[in-house]
Image 1 (tube, rainbow, N blue to C red):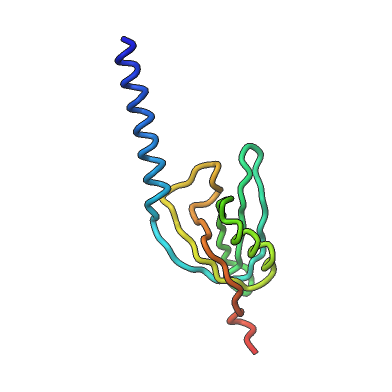
Image 2 (cartoon, rainbow, N blue to C red):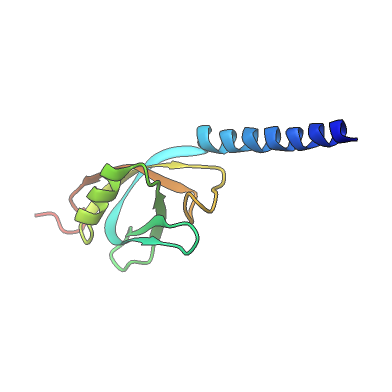
Length: 121
């Protein structure tokens, strides 16, 4: 009886680890988005995560929401510095997320300041 219970629990743990590894290492898509950085904050009650938004239109009708993992300190610092500016974000889209990673499936890996196409001189 104990041996069977051990195998069942071991199998459940192995399946969960395989699922976690799949979500972590296999991206759904990769790409870039540009827009005005209108929000970047750390939020959450149980697990604090970094969340942000960029506006991709003049009227703010198209909002792109994203998350940043805690280990990407350089990205976090750049986003805090560039708030209110036009930025280009490089992201990885995952199949799903975990509550301790962030609210969205889009995770920013790189950020750079850019020039708005609407107000070029």
